[in-house]
Image 1 (cartoon, helix red, strand yellow):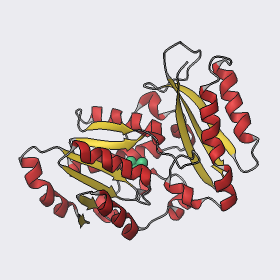
Image 2 (cartoon, rainbow, N blue to C red):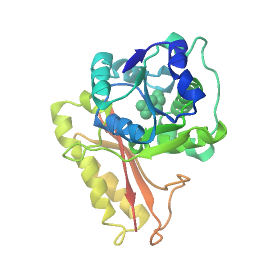
Image 3 (cartoon, rainbow, N blue to C red):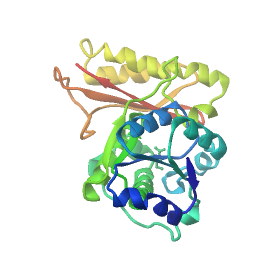
Length: 281
Ligand code: PAF
């Protein structure tokens, strides 16, 4: 596994793969890797000749300076995990390399950026689009892998790839969970022991919600999710939405056989956790 920090070095490493049109797979990350990220690496390795993983904590997508400051960072441990997972190249640029000038580009994703994360984290998706589009231009991958824990991010990145001419192909990989159901997240390490012991209620509530589409209206179920999680003293729902999986438009009624997505953001203060699950009425 090779670790590079500059665009020039990365391009040089990928030159022959590009020339020979080998499938290059790309897993963008902000480090603090866990098994969720490693599942993306595994999926990538199955499909691609070369697996490139980027590690860059992108400042432009943080709307809370404390969140950026506290974001866990451990390049050595990340590289050890990636080596064991069989990644071929790690690209770990610094801020100057990624943004020699401030990135002032404004992207537009219509409704996709106005709801849920977009509503509560203004400018977040513009920052994601800035860094992901730049990484796509640098790596020029055939496939790029994203986790469905960030369900809305997958929709945004698909739209971004479409706006960039249809490349790369975006592959969405399922949420990976701890044994007690908590969705794996780099932010889980920031939870206190008490918060960590309460956090599995989030996933447990989503799983229970799956069985309630027959007996509750969409609004009734949404409210039930909010009330159930808020009943826990350590947790506070920021939003719970039931949306169409493609358009992210709020669903008004159940339609038999048509899946939708229940998405939540929950504070275990100051840590903010997100999760989602498919509902299949
Ligand atoms: O999902 C993430 O970790 C980040 O949003 C991403 C895609 C690496 C962009 O910084």
